[in-house]
Amino acid sequence: MRLKSRLRSWFAGRTAGVTPLRLIAALAAFLALHLPAHAASKADVEAQFRRWIEVDLWPEARQAGISSAAFKAAFAGVKLNWDLPDLAPPGFPKPKARKQSQAEFSSPGSYFSEKRLQGLAATGRSLASAHASTLKRIERTYGVPGPIVLAIWGKESGFGRAKIPHPIMDVLATKAFMSTRPELFRHELVAALQILQSGDIKEAEMRGSWAGAMGQPQFLPSSFLKYAVDFDGDGRRDIWNSVPDSLASIANYLAQKGWQGRRDWGFEVAIPAGVSCAQEGPDLARPIADWAGMGIGRVSGKPFPAGEGAAPGMMLVPAGIHGPQFIVTPNFYVIKEYNNSDLYALYIGNLADRIAAGAGPFRGAWGDVGKMLRSDVLGMQKALVAIGYDVGKVDGLPGYKTRRSLGDWQAKNGLAPTCFPDASLKAKLR
Image (cartoon, rainbow, N blue to C red; front, side):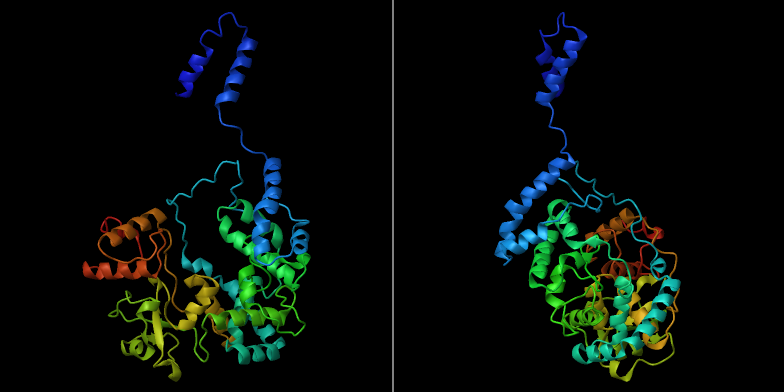
């Protein structure tokens, strides 16, 4: 029965001769019986949080090998952080789904702040000298060049100088209990308990970002357990206070992800007009000598290194023909394991080149791209899928499979391939 009908039925015969005050009281009684309970208060959620720790989380932690004493000590001072993003507290209104109508990817050029890159490169060169012996030992041990390690260190934490604001247990416990992705953070919370129990770091020093990334390399706890190393020989893996441990842990991460020694990360190139941009992607690798045979050459004018000719390389055009173009090696995709973004990996590669050899910005200019509505790109992806193209994720973001599908479709329909979504394609691709 609908609320209006129930209200009419409930009050039938009850309101004759009733004073206004009694009528208000009767209405309040009805609403208390028939409307949903009010939203939980913060105090309610805090109480649920404490019960969740003891009843729900503790059995999982115990199964993972955490002792009762270590568990109690770890949670003695933990509190919910209500200021973190992406929270969904129980009993509170659910977060609104993000609309896909806004332009959610910006022009790639804005990512490469020249002032910032120059500053990081200058500091990186100074630190390369200061830590030369450590970096040489790291390169011998893991096969990863020092400039790559320094570039990641600089990008992630300003070479360890950035303020790392949050007690990591507060962040992970909050997000495991009431974030929009609780299972992810629950796994990381148990990993953090294992780190504390190991004695590598005291809880007071175990600090991280709002997303749970810790220390100078910005490792999640599960990554710490897999890749962090004690490189200064003090018996502890300390990525918060030890530079050797931080740098070696970064290198170990890359090495275990498949870094190929004696290979570069990639090269900025010029792709001739007669060579289609719709050939990018790690699944379309070919020997670098083959790319050179098509007329693709380095913008520096230098030949590709002799050792690279027979090795595989991949075309990369992150802005289609509207930006810098690259031939990258498998090491580029290893860098992406650290942060799954083409722009991040390009940033690290460029910064490493600046630290190692005084390189400058990419020669190709980033065009005026990135202003498309995400919903429009999503429509193009759906249209391409409908005619048989593999665009990767249908999410409104132009990854390499979307870019090359657009380029191939353009060529087959008599258009000059641009390999990037633009407004002129909206009406044509339906």
